[in-house]
Image 1 (cartoon, rainbow, N blue to C red):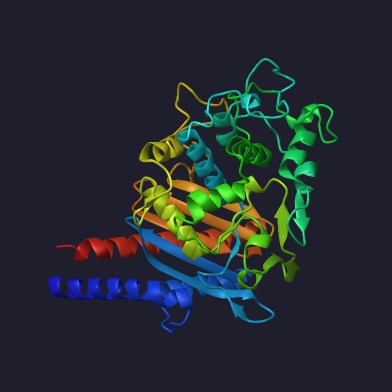
Image 2 (cartoon, rainbow, N blue to C red):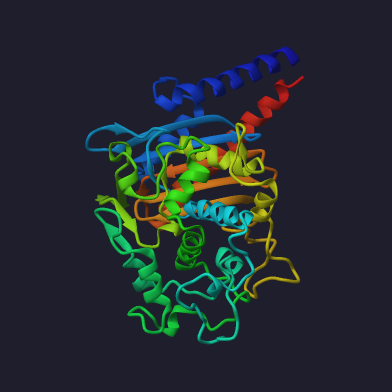
Amino acid sequence: MKLLCSVFTFIIIFHCQKATSQHVKNTTSHISPIDTIIENKMSQSGIVGLGAAIIIDKKLVWMKGYGYADKDNKVPFTPNTIMNIASISKTFTGVCLLKAVEDKKLSLDEDINTYLPFKVINPFFPDEKITLRNLATHTSSIMDRESVYDSTYHYGGDSPEPLGEFLKSYFDPTGKRYTKDNFLNKKPGSYREYSNIAAGLAGYIVEIVTGKKLNEYSRQYIFKPLKMDNTGWFLSEVKLENHSRLYDKQGDTLKTIPLYGCTTYPDGGVRTSVSELSRFFIALLSDGEYKGKRILKKESVEEMQRYQFTDSNKPENINPSKLNSGIFWATKQSGTKIGHSGTDPGVKTEMLSDLSKKVAVILFTNTTLTEKDMLTYYYAIYNELCKYGIQLKDAKSSATP
């Protein structure tokens, strides 16, 4: 029995190692149970393209693409396919923020008006400061006014409106987008309200204090060290021939969504691949280091991932055991996962690990589904990838003398 177990373990690990090299190019013809599950759920849901990776003990052990990056032209979706990753981008903004803290260019707990060329004041609480920690934990009292935020999506290319101009128009009382409704009637720090515009503001502050645009700062301190050569914040920075098309599947209707940019890009603008994002995620799971390249000090990563909410210090609408926050870092699935997720038109992404950082999954899809299908099929695929990751981890543990 022990011999059979060892043989079985060897087969799983061999398949895992083989998958990592072969599946990157989508050249393997081997069909495993996880392939069958994913392909069946894609067929049932109408998901056009999908890419995924599994990280075990902070090492990439499996990744593969399924379906199409471009259905009309039969271009396969691979781990090297580029697409926008929506709010996972906030973790890049978080790293940039903490890098600027390391360099003593700013403080998480200083009033943000210390850094800004215009004032950001909650009119309901004008004497209360808003901090970068508030922005990064979604407790700033800043609201995303839906009609305004939706207008920041620019279909057909990168947004032509400068980030700073948009933010000034939103926060300056003389601005064309200003209204008291841009803020909650809640004291900063007392209530959690997810805000993309607040994340855009955090990225803009990094630009001000460093003197570099966020895309340039990211490239210097994240993309280049991790050899994320095909990653960028804007459509103009990436090879469009490698970029996935985006789709919207509603019932029996499948529509193509034009590629787009967003004015508040620090909240969701990064474009990367499953392959390259895995390097970034491994660095965050490994105290800021990947293959000898460090993007943050260990202490900074610990601060980024530290639970900011406690029973004695928390927003009034939060149960810290169910939902908590780091610096643009979150707990998910009732506190059982850490990392970040993303949702945008034609985009659904996950970059999540278990709490022990032993099993982590990255998942990209290029198709918007109905809410029912999202819950039924997309999350079923994610859960199957988690189960497969546990199998691979158990196999690895069994093989270790």
